[in-house]
Length: 165
Ligand code: PNS
Image (cartoon, rainbow, N blue to C red; front, side, top):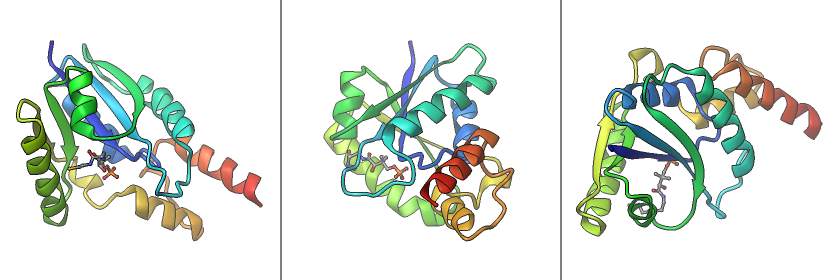
């Protein structure tokens, strides 16, 4: 049983994240998509909202035989990975600029938990510039984000904005 953790903030989940999940499904029997509970950040969506959105959208993608689970976690990622008996951490790398931070995290995680491998995956080129941060910025400034996030995310972002107005 090859279980991986795909951790992140997913605020919000983008089509780039979904692309990585689909690629991960070719390598693993189970992927736990783990949403970090980070009290230091003020997110657009709450952790509960992000988990709820993720559960809906991962249900829609082709995940062949791979089981997809969505959970939240707090504390050290490697501790969470060990508790879940995961073999690997999956992270997406879009560009060289991601690499330095990701390498630091991967090496620190390896030092803390040598049995847990980090697997870097590249999303499709079409998503190489897509990040949750930019999606939020473009959306908040009135730009078009369709095609960058699942339609449900766009709907939920609009809903949230209209409630705040
Ligand atoms: O989507 P993000 O914000 O780039 O994800 C970052 C994440 C959640 C992978 C990272 O912040 C993390 O693993 N946090 C948990 C705390 C932890 O283990 N920190 C040490 C990392 S070496």
